[in-house]
Length: 61
Image (cartoon, rainbow, N blue to C red):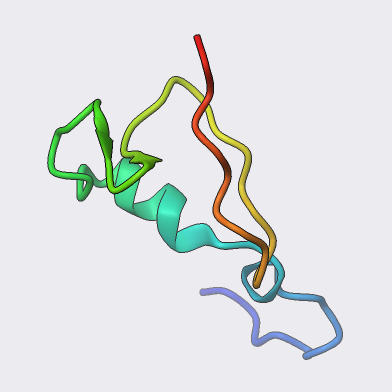
């Protein structure tokens, strides 16, 4: 069983938008690979934006 957290460790989830990564990993982007509403749904890799940053722009490949 895991030991209880001491509360001193910084939680990365408070810094990064991990919901986007989770949705892609779990297939919640609807299986689309095209741009919808000016945002790519699925890419090869993507930078995880920090909280309250603008959503990353589409890559021009």
